[in-house]
Length: 205
Ligand code: 5GP
Image (cartoon, rainbow, N blue to C red; front, side, top):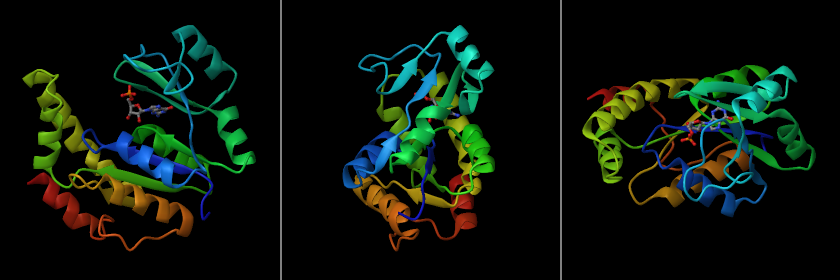
């Protein structure tokens, strides 16, 4: 393995969850770092699997104990990466996957020396919009808000070592490219964005 940590972020509609699941099935040394959060569990989520769901008091106590590698507030809730679990995974020979938003990712990049960072994105603005609308669960106002936020967030992709595109129906290809990056530090895959500037310009259209 080229790197001992994977920092993985992606905009709304990037298909982050699917790609990560596929990548973990291909490379069992990738292990999800389970974050602590104060947000309420969604249907189907389990304590200790998706997140450790805690109270605000418990979260603040963990900050006091210096128990987080990083933590942040996002959409009114706290999220943090437990330090002990993270270093424990490295000691056991796993590659912890920090599936976190861009502010937290920037903090971790400053703290760690050895990491691979990957930002996952939909191919273009039209696909992002179609994917967000495709969920069919949100109001028009909420869709517009999420679209604007996602468009802005894409520009944070510049902080990451690699930007990968999740084309429609090609999640497996994105997952394979990510695994190659973790194992070999490089990939020849077409999903790797080589001209970042042109990509970002294209996203604004
Ligand atoms: P959700 O509430 O939809 O599960 O997650 C909201 C956002 O928080 C996602 O972008 C997710 O990647 C991010 N996130 C989850 N855990 C952490 C964490 O421990 N630290 C940070 N900084 N972000 C997190």
